[in-house]
Amino acid sequence: MQHLLGTVVRANNVVVHALDPEGANPRPLVGVAWHEHLVDRWPVIRAEWDAFRADGGRLPRIEDLLGEHQGNTEVWAAGLLIAAGRPVGPHPARFPGTVDALAGVPGLRSALWSVLAPGAVLPEHCGPNAGVLRYHLGVVCPEGASLTVAGTEVPYLEGGGILFDDTVEHAAVNPAPGERVTLFCEIERPIGAPWRPVNATVQRLLGLDRRYRSAPQRAAAWDRAMNPRLG
Image (cartoon, rainbow, N blue to C red):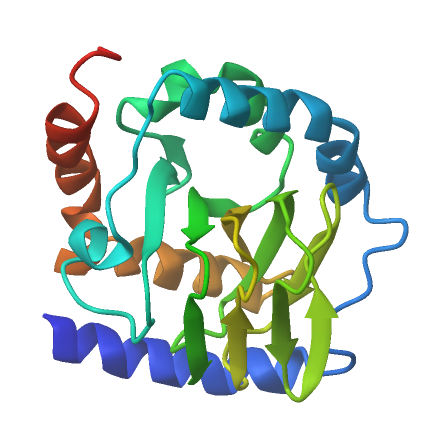
């Protein structure tokens, strides 16, 4: 199944890149309504995150959530909020304002808290799926934390967003003494008809991949172990 899905995704990538040839990467966000809505809701999002941490909330490592290592040094932790376009797991109830803000993002496939520990590095790599764009909203962004996409370094800013095609080389670093926290989203790439529904179908099929299919169950199990007091 995984081999077949990989073949389908690679074929979809060819068509998607032809229909939406790469311009600026990262992509400009000026005038993008859903991004501006998330920026407006940043104070709510930040307050919910701070409350979670103040209550002793903890998140599992990304490799424990997905079942395989992602190449990072130091800890990269993650908390699943949205999978296959729907809220999942225990976190949506803890972050109602955050999930409500995410509901305004068209074509949102997944969203999670993404936390890079002090000194963490995610080396250059390329994502496999051109049918989505990646979006990072800065929640807690210490000085020096940055994302580099296709050789362009972009600092993480609190209340700032970065939208990019992750099938090009990109890397993230957090050299600061404090953690870097973002909302990490995958959004269906806005391509024209008639291929848009085909791409949407490919993204739904990806939900059959065992890594993504079992992520909500893994997230719930880790949460029970790490946050028993939070309920």
